[in-house]
Image 1 (cartoon, rainbow, N blue to C red):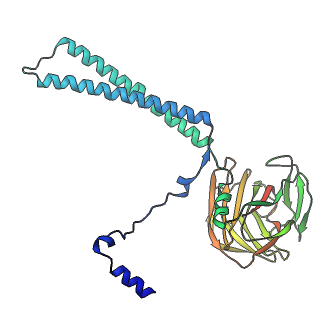
Image 2 (image 1 turned 90 degrees about the vertical axis):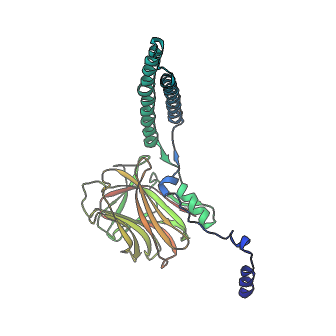
Length: 329
């Protein structure tokens, strides 16, 4: 079979073979491909400012063309005749040109840039775009298998010497959040999902880490099984890094690279999205309140564990967790 293919290709004429070529393709960066939702009134204002900028730009180039036309008439006349009328027209055109350039083009260009900045700051990431991307890659429909807003604090149990409780101290949305207290990692608390899930999910939620801590300063959450084996992540302020980790009977082991944590993300709510693909690829992204991505941990592949049934809150203390969700993909 392979010999026949080789023979057929070798028998192609020179004219036919010239169509076999390759070329490098440069893909846009993730930042360039990001989709955002912005208020319509800001988009309309930006379009109006750009329209005004184009109008005054057209006026400027028209005036400049008229000035050049007059100058050409002067220099091509024999002898050169510069009349009073042409000087008056030239002066008017120069004034109009300067006003259109500085008073029109520059003004509306600056306004357009200002509105563009407003659009950028007001924009938010398209919700669940990462979920949809992974869903298409895995060829399965997304479905929510776990959600807890902590308004009804049921099903949570302490793990070892840790303590988890419903708290009114802080909440990302609603009235309550989960407060992790009592003892450092791996101690904490857990809640069973209600079913077993495999690789291929997105675990998301919000964390508030106060600067005044009684224990360690790491926020650590994971998806684990009944033996407390599984995968999660750590926002480790003691090491000033963020990384993905494996849990073996609750004990953590760092997987892959540690990403520097320049902003310690304390005294503020931040969102996490922990991605697990069916092939065992794990990755993590952190976002601020406006939806801007603030940190992206490179993916790592690990398939030691593939069946899970609980959400576990590890780490230091105290810190707060809210709006937890697991979406199967």
